[in-house]
Image (cartoon, rainbow, N blue to C red; front, side):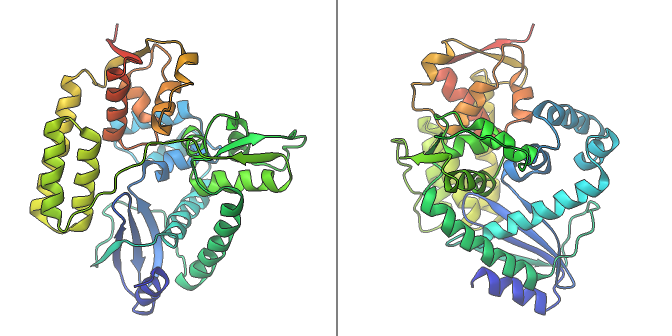
Length: 364
């Protein structure tokens, strides 16, 4: 069922509950009450509220880290903490929450395929900022977004391309603080994907800024770097995928193990046995990484000069982690500001230590 038809069906039926949509990489939840969308969420850390506010210039990485540390102690919602600290007003917070919900749903319209289910009557247990988004208007906006993506792809064909400044940015007064951060991140070396991570931004937000600069003749995009192709995950059923995940784990191929485990969970999200198997594998992987020294209280330190690392074919995630290593911040502190899932980020630390790029010292 096409996404517009699915949303319209729930709106027409005045549904109340949670729509869950996954594509094997990201899972999104859209909450309905009486056919109106009241909120949306995502499993992609870059779409968490804190990272979203960083990308739009409301808070810094350091402020996000401090607020998350307070949240761990108090269990208070992050938005309330930031409002209480005077870092954002209630009005701006509500506007950003609605924009975050809309952006997540717009992205669904770009998916080629996915699995969905609707959980009738189920809404989050925690109190949400009240929103009321009409599906018809949102669908029209999403279709306009697709047209914008078509225009973007003519100039920026993928997130692997590298933007290069060819003209001066003489006037930045018309740019928001988040947009200025994107421009500042263009160093003729970072790919679009790396700029997204560096600024905690979505690909659309970054690409739309770069598109305007390209159309003004101040920026050009060069061909993608030669990246190692990712082998697609294929299996007939979730049990086979889970079995393959364990096989890769035992061989020490933790990256493939994670990909197969997530694919298994997505293929049959309501299969309790598969969910348990995937959870056990993730726990086993976390224990293995911690046994290898990737612990929250360890302090990562560079073992080679940063200039040597720039010549390596690093992933965007590896590049992000390396630029946050300052010789004093712990793994746990870096994880707080990393817009990557915790276990994936721990795998990055593991790969960097195995490659001899960093060491993990005990905190003094």
